[in-house]
Image 1 (cartoon, rainbow, N blue to C red):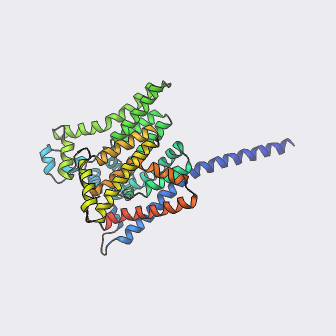
Image 2 (tube, one colour; image 1 turned 90 degrees about the vertical axis):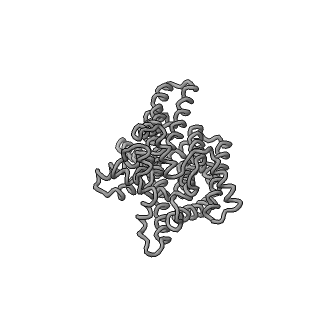
Image 3 (cartoon, rainbow, N blue to C red; image 1 turned 180 degrees about the horizontal axis):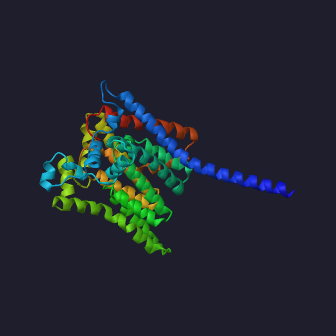
Length: 391
């Protein structure tokens, strides 16, 4: 009898452990399946849309700014005065933050892959990590259904093609989602380190640093134990962007060198949204191309979604990060066709739609999600195959 009881207990324990392991594996497989599925469909669309005689899918994934990142990974940053950098062929590379190209260089040396292959490897792996961490954050804030919808909306949004390209967005979103998840779990050292890494990957990392500071100050205001450790832990994230801008200024001999190079190379200045507003109004009134009009509509939809997110009282650090990132994306002038790409890391503008899909009937959710994904994936493929301007 004792033997039977022991066998039953062992079997039950094993079954419970297996069930728990399967649940953990399922929460990992769902976002990975969404990410892999959207990448496969998008690459197939790119291959289908390539004009005759084109260099191929890989060349398209390494086009435009990917060339700058690969150049930094291979050669490092140029030396010289601000005037010399503005006039030199590779001076613009100093406008690109170091996180992504340094990681590309590390993968190149560790694996022997060429710099181009290393760039795509980093982007694809980081994109998978971003999907997993975003799903985990969504489950923690809401539930698994909303998390799955949020992950799908992120992976299939109109310029999600950048997650497959030699760009820094996939790495940046992985760091943002990881930092916010760590902050929600009150793992402050991890949040601070991830925040610093994000701040050294893209200038929008300043938005994440502000969000982490808000999260830490919330701990102080609530009087929770360890609140000052939270403040100290996230403080380095606030220094990331200023540190790189200072380094560029010291290297070029001018404190505003980074801004000057951005303006000289890409016509980018922060005008508090005046240029974006003029673009939207002109597009709706006299726009003569569907891409121009579609980008205007995407900007309008993003602002409306942000307002809805505020009304829905999204978790404050996520809201602060998203609104600040949105202001940085919309508030700067420059090439209007880059706006959808700059919106990819904003994240919070996708939350209202994700919650709506989570509440809808399963059939409706699947139909709307599939239509959204097909359009978004096609849109990104179109902009890097048929569209003739940089993204």
